[in-house]
Image (tube, rainbow, N blue to C red):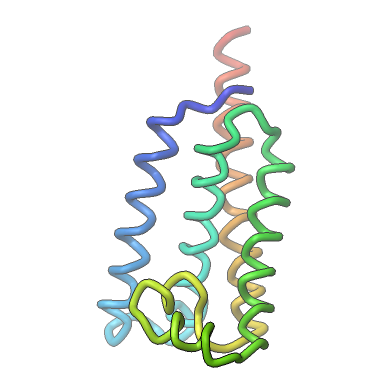
Length: 132
C-alpha cells in the first residue's frame, strides 16, 4: 500500500483543528467525552502524521509506531526536571509533551489509533473490492 501524502496531510490538519476545538469547547462537552476526546484526537494526529511520513508501511506497523510514540510521550510525563517542565510550561510544549501521567490518556491513545487503523483498513478493503 502507498498512502497519498496529500490526504494524510489534510487529515492531520483537520484533526489538529478538531483537537484544539475540543479544548476550546470542553465546557459544553460531556465529561466522558472530555476525558478521552482530546487525547484520542492527538493520537489520531500522530497516526495520520506517521501515515504521511511512512507511506509504504502496513497499517498495523503504522499503528504500533504511533502508539509507541504516544506511550513514550505519556510515560515521559513521569519525569520532572526543571528543563523539561520549562518546555511543558509553554503552549506548544504542553500540547506536545503534556503535563502529568494519566492512565486514561493511555486508553485514549489506544482508542484514537485503533479507530484510525480500523478506518484505514476499511477504506483499503473498499478500494480492493472496487478494483476487482
